[in-house]
Image 1 (tube, helix red, strand yellow):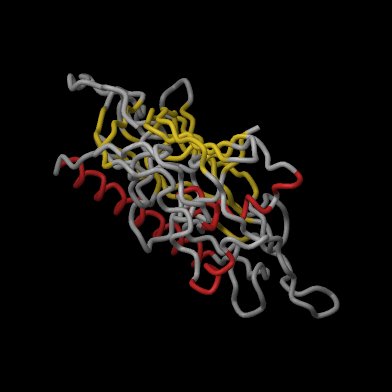
Image 2 (spheres, rainbow, N blue to C red; image 1 turned 60 degrees about the vertical axis):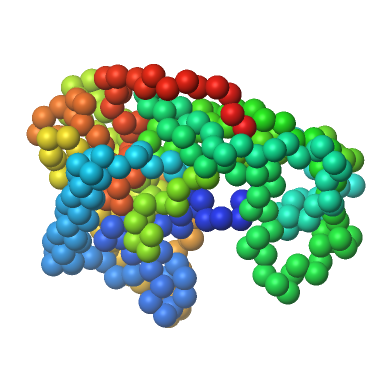
Length: 328
């Protein structure tokens, strides 16, 4: 069994779970508490939300076109999944979980840590290859731990882990540009069968730092090439102020289609019979919206309003000829 291990940088997966939909206040906090029900959207509110969604989609398309025109290197943003914990902590080793997150390691024995290469290779499924700076094994663990918690390292709460081996391997991960095979470190520890497979390259931060990233994360295209169904996390499809309807807005250009998802609050009472404000569950529901494009998507890119691809990029017509030795 494989479960995600803690990662001490903000990953895109976390960002997607925490993000809000364009024009959606399903997780709105207006002083009545997180998850409080919000008033239903009026016609004016809907028009404003749709206009805002269209502006976001237009800006995403503008940025995409500008980056391609500047011939910038492809971004390498991992959609979660690394580091990955393989196996489960034994009953008498439950404290090891916190120790790993804390980066609480005993000094490795000589020869345990391999030398860190200068760089490594990212090979996307569509044939694009890029070299990225390499990262050393165990890098990043514990670095963001608050100072007041560092003293617990080496205690029964967070014992020191002994690294017994680190070996170079590769792993296929999902990125915002599709699947990619990348170098990784496989790490083992004393007194446990748990292994950790960690990224051995430096990845990029999510695009547009500081912007809300819509939780739209998947898309499928119908056989006609024009019917696009976008999947995302949002409010439930139910009655009352805790439910929402969603509308897609698409900006269609020659090389890219940008889609924003606009949330519309359903009507219903926001205060219960006892006078207490209705609280909505703080759990995302899996939702979809469908939009019909003016022309088949064909080889155009499909992105969300924050610039994240909703489909793997179109296949490249040529592949690089640079050598691809295995790197760790």
